[in-house]
Length: 334
Image (cartoon, rainbow, N blue to C red; front, side, top):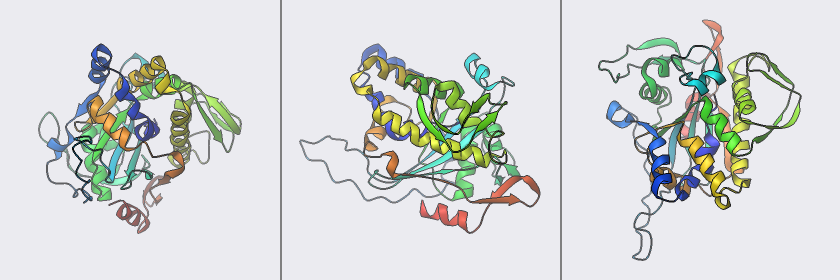
């Protein structure tokens, strides 16, 4: 499913205004986290070198907002765990995959960004990943990209992305089926324009070409549909997901969250209750700082692209990175 990049970039700052006391404690307690840095250690791409922020004056905030570039791996999990996810996702209630993966690169100054979608059907060399239970996974060649999450969770997903891109992931964010649907409903729906008719019995989505205002369940179906568009591959679905990214950014920008405490709480609760982050973003204060640093970012300054791919010679149902275009793209984000 679609990971809520729109919320990540434009709406997280709203979480911080949720007062204090029980509300703050409840929202903060909702957030789950994974210690990516400790698990992966130093065997990772180098962090980007950024220009230091000017020293704050005595009257200014003692902790100025960050302004350097940042890379965030945003995953949408297709986990069926829990009644809400199972109802929306169907299938088995066990296991999960990274149904959607986007690398969000925010430029220095934090007023523009590039969102790169990685097709889940991409064949990659999956590196050896540490397991929380001890030991590690084996290196796997010609493995589907989304299998990294299946065998090693968030840690292996991050390591695999860093391995194939050479780009350090500064942060990690994950949201599940029910969280996405609840978020869209809390925002009052989302308006999306489709370029073709969509008819997908698997996702239960049937839309005529044109502009539609979707509720949470419909938006989730749009993010997951693939059989009712194009050639039925994951590549057509990515285009729909990228439309949703920008539509959510626009919806966040036009909503009255800051003047409607009840709606603000509903959105914040929907997000945090389904959110997993790295330990660098696992509190409301940390999410607020990220959101505030991105408040100048609008949908007009967000570029959405897909990692260049070609059909895999070994399997026409899979793709591989198209070189040198893919390497050139990742190089531009370092």
